[in-house]
Image (cartoon, rainbow, N blue to C red; front, side, top):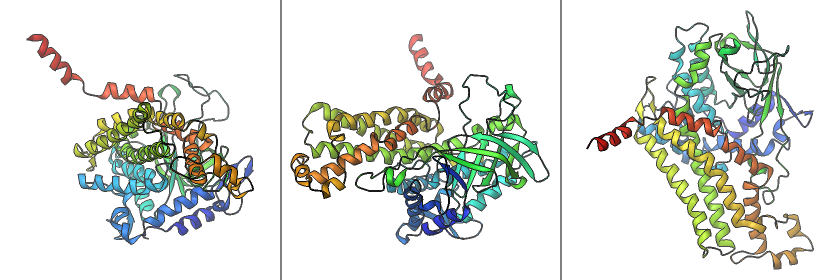
Amino acid sequence: MPVITGAQYIDRINKLQSEVWIDGKKVTGNISEHPAFKGIMKSQAHLYDLQNDEKLKDVMTYTSPTTGETVGLSFLMPKTKEDLAKKRKMVQQWARESNGMMGRSPDYMNTTLMTLAASAHLLEGEENCFPENIKAYYEYVRENDLCLTHTFIEPQVDRGFQFWEDSTEPIAAKIVDRTKEGLIVKGARLLATQGGITDEMLLVSVGKPYDDESGFAFSIPSNTKGLRFICRESFVVGDSPFDYPLSSRYEEMDTIVVFDNVLVPWNRVFFYDNLDVSYSYLGQSSFQPFALHQVLSRQIVKTEFMLGIVQSIIETINISGYQHVQEKATEIIVALETLKALIIKSEVEAKRNESGLMQPDFSTLKVAINIFPKVYPRFTEIVQLLGASGLVSIPTKNAFQSPIKKDLDQYLQSAAHNAEDRVKLFRLAWDATMSSFGTRQTLYERFFFGDPIRIAMALYHEYDKQPYVEIVKKKLEN
């Protein structure tokens, strides 16, 4: 089938009736009508509708090489540098709909699955590995335009370097049985963003050499028997676009995924009981460079949005003449242009990898992911420093429709706007940086690809520094 519409996405998720729990209550009926999910599902549906916009067809889609149908461009296996640029433009087209606030829009997992399928050759000839399954699954998801979530993280029981469970009941999800029908999995995994509002879920577990854990990878429908999504508290406070312009639309929700003796059919298993493969597959595949390319494309859009908020505040309350204000805005400008330069550099220096894909330069992208977790919290701080008390003096839309409107109009006006427009802007800035939704965004970007210190260590160890040492040696020999 060709790319789906937003209505088809919502209908499909509603029909799944996946087991989702929030605030101690099981979601019943259509999940798209639940206050915690209706905003994000409507926003996600809009993304699918864009794929059907004739004006955007060349940006959003391409022709399937197997069926000839129109499929989402986020599934494209890039063979040229031009293909990489196309993928960037497609990602940014979707990202601009949420101003980069939807970190788990469908293109993230579509890109991830594409890389795993392209790297399936790494599983060939290996014990308990099924490369044909992951290639078939990629085609199935692409041809049906499915939406995926994923979970990679184990519960934070003990972060000791060599912790292993001594509980009689599994905590971290693990294989507890192998049957003729498939694997039986029990335990939990963390942080499936958009869990319960996607068609399917993909799980990759890395083995632990010191704990006899061998790792596994598989995919299953979100409504698989025994699969539960336990949500954190919703950050949707209300659905007013004036009062909650971001959280009412883009609150993606994060979930704990519980596997209660879940059966994973063999045709959905990618590998299991192979420690070497589970330990090396993600690292040796093209997952990281392509995932980083997608993420950086979105983060550039998010940086543009934060610069727009800052400059709007500056103009609204007329503070552009202050040097410290100019300096703060320039910090974001420098970050934005740096990130834009890095993604273009990664495409210019792209090379064909052993999977036959045109792979963006990995080192360049690793530099970018060392930058963004540091600068994004600074963006939120700059908004707070410049907005100051204006980020607290933000009455609701209802207040402007009440008998106190005259007071608000008089005392909350600004140099550039009337009171209502000024408050609308400052509520946007507050929702981006200070609400529960906004602070979650900051934490999310801090740890998007893991511990920033470990990311920095990886770049240090992997980056080829020897040519620069040789420059110094030559100078010392003169």
